[in-house]
Image (cartoon, rainbow, N blue to C red; front, top):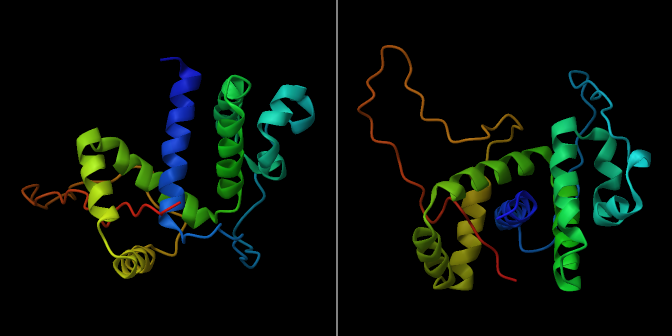
Length: 191
C-alpha cells in the first residue's frame, strides 16, 4: 500500500473518530476569548501561494487554516493531496467534507479526536467491528446518553495526550491493571 493511500486511510479513520466524538450535526467553530498566554504560531513554509493549482483544489477546505499549521502538518496534508486526483468524485467530496469538519473543530475536539484515533489504531479489526455492532444495537436514546457521557468526560483542556499514557510514577506499583478501551471510548455517529 502506498504512503498516500495509507495516509488517506488514516485520515478517513481519524475523521470518523473526530465526527464520532461530536454531535451528529456538523461541528461549529469554537468561540474562545483571546488569551494573553497564547502566542501566534510561527509562519511556516510552504505558503498557500506556493502550492500548485492541483494542491489548491485538493486542500481548498484548509485554506483558512493553512497559515496556522505547523510544517509537519502541512507535509501530511500535502501527502494526502497527492492522491486526491485519483479518487472518485464521491470520495473527493467526502474528503473535502471531512476536511471542512476538521477545520471547524476546536483545539480540544481535535486533541480528543487524535486520542480516539490512537486508541482505535490499537484495536483489532474484529474488536472494532464488535464495538460498532454493539453501538448499532443501542436505541437512539441510549446513543444520545452515550454521546452526552463521552462529552462530559472530555477534559476542557487542549493539552490531551496524543497517545494513551500508561506511565508508572516513581514509587508506585506497576501491578495496576491497565483498562482496556470500551465501547464508550469511541462513540460513532450515524450517517
